[in-house]
Length: 401
Ligand code: RFL
Image 1 (cartoon, helix red, strand yellow):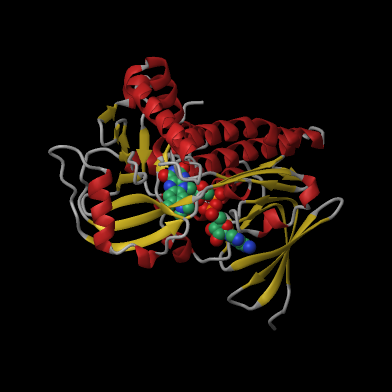
Image 2: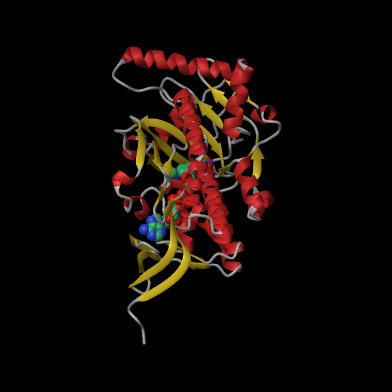
C-alpha cells in the first residue's frame, strides 16, 4: 500500500544539488558521514542551467585534496592571457607570467556538476531529485526539512543533525533565517548585462574585455563553434530593445581594434542579467549552514561565484568531518564561517574593483561620472605600467589565496 507520508533520517541533509551541494555530498560520503542531497529539479533540468565555467587554481587544489578534481584535470583547457580594449589602446594581459604560471581552468559548470553527480551516485550516495524543500524546522537536538516529492505528490520529512543550505540565492534556506539573526550586506547597480550566446567561432584566442564610453563589453570563449558575449545595458532596457543587429553593431564598436574582425553568427540565446552583491554574516544559524549563492552573491565579473561555492563546501565538509570524528564542542562549528568570510570579502573586493574599472559609470551627476571614468582609465593604465598593481590584479584574478 502506498503511504502518503515519508520520514527519513540522516546526519546531514543537503538542500540543493548545485556545485556547493554536490561537492559537500561527495566529501561527506567519502568520509563515511551519512547524508542526503535533495534538489527540486531532476538531473536533466539541473544540467540544462548552462552557466560559464572559469575555475580557479585554488578550487582545483581543494577538489584534488578530496579526489574530486579529475573531471577538470582530464577535460578543462586553460588560459593565462586576457585582453583589455578601449578606444585609445589595447592591453594584452599575460597574467600567468605574473602568477608564477598559475592559470584559469575552463570547463562548463553544468558538465562539472554532472560529473560530480555521477561520482556521488556511483559510490552509493543518496540523492532525491524532484524533491522541493518547503520548510526548515529547527529543534533543540535536530532539524527537520519538510519537502514535497514532486513525482509522487506526497510530503517527505527529513530529520537530520544539520542542514546545509546549498539552494542558491532564491532558495528557502536563506528565507528561513530570522532577519535579526544575521547581518546582511547588499549592493545593487543602475546597469545590468545582456548575456548572449551565438553560433560564431571565437574572435580571439583569449577573453576580451571592452572598456568604452557606451558601456562594457565582453567576449568569452566557449568552443570552436559557439561564443559568449556580454554587453552593459541600462536596467530599463528590455530584450526587445536589443535586436541582433544592434547587438553586433555594439560589440563591433565597443571591442574595436585596428585590423581586428568580429566573427558573427546566429544568436541563439540572449538574456538580461541583474548585477548584485550580497553577503550574509555569519553563514550559520543554529543547525543550518549556508554555502554558495545561498550565503553570498557576487557579480559575474572575475568569475568567482562557482569558485566560492565549491570552496565553501570544502571548508564546511572539513569542519563537519572533524566535528563528527573528534567530537569537539559545538562552538567549533563556528569556525566554518570564521574561515570563509575573509575569502568571500576578498573576492567581493576584487570583483567590485574589476567591475567598476571596466564599466562606464552611470548616474545623474555628470561631474562624478567624468571623475570615475578617469579613475577607471588610470587603473587600466596601471595594469600595463605598474608592476605591483598588475601582479596583485593577476593573483586575485586567477584566485591565489
Ligand atoms: P546553484 O548552482 O544555484 O544551485 C542551487 C541548487 O539548489 C536547488 N534548489 C532547491 N532544491 C530543493 N528545494 C528547494 N527549495 C530549492 N531551491 C533551489 C536548485 O535547483 C539548484 O540545483 O548554487 P551553488 O551551489 O551555490 O553554486 C553557485 C554557482 O552556481 C554560481 O555562483 C555560479 O554559476 C556563478 N557564475 C560563475 N561562477 C564562477 O566561478 N565562474 C564563472 O565563470 C561563472 N560564470 C556564473 C557565470 C553565473 C551565471 N549566471 C547564470 C548567474 C555565468 C553566469 C551567466
